[in-house]
Image (cartoon, helix red, strand yellow):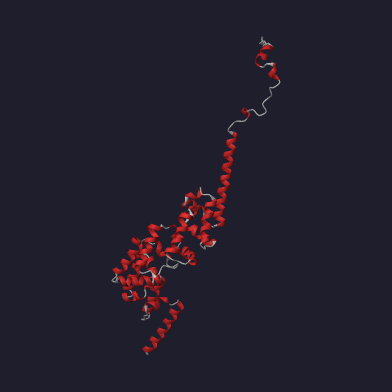
Length: 308
């Protein structure tokens, strides 16, 4: 049998809600318990993430489509690119463009050195331009040529790399008509202790005087950029050994080291030896293939006529 509990008397309700307040009581139209308090923060987080995703995609499109920079390489070599703002990346492009670099040149520089993408132009890039203009004294129109030939200069330290190299080169004789130009800017990124000085010392070890070496370097600045082990040593060995050359010829024609050993030096020397002929070092190497072959035929004909 189910029993029912008796309802409390009506006076019980009046005890809690006096008649004077009954008319002022209204139902809650938006009670807080119907919607969790954290719903708004979730929406905000989702919105922030959505916005961040759009901005990140916009940054990738800017790198890939506008600058033609490999974004994967950029993020791998410079992780700060991920958090950098798009305005930061654009400020670097504006900076480089202000020095005369067109977009294709800017793209090449930034793709080679993604570190520049998050640099501060005022502290990292413009001081390099100022150094080239006012210390190296390269004319403004040639600044872009210097950067295009040697983008690495933009990521080189001014006080520990560029200025010491400039001083060393000027002391060596790169002044006046031989001063550093956009053609020889590459020398400024070379370490004095590990690159420039060892090459001077190697050439002197062959029996050349310091004055001879300096004259060779000033005539052919590329000597200071070639690898000792991969370029200088094998070419000197072939010249002194197989060619039985004289150091005097190297002094007169230091450009010898700029020619490919296998594809030009050996081939032409062996062609001359095969027919018992010889040419001055400069004439043997500076001539085009057509000129060299024409001289070879002419000398062979002259030799045959002399033998008759």
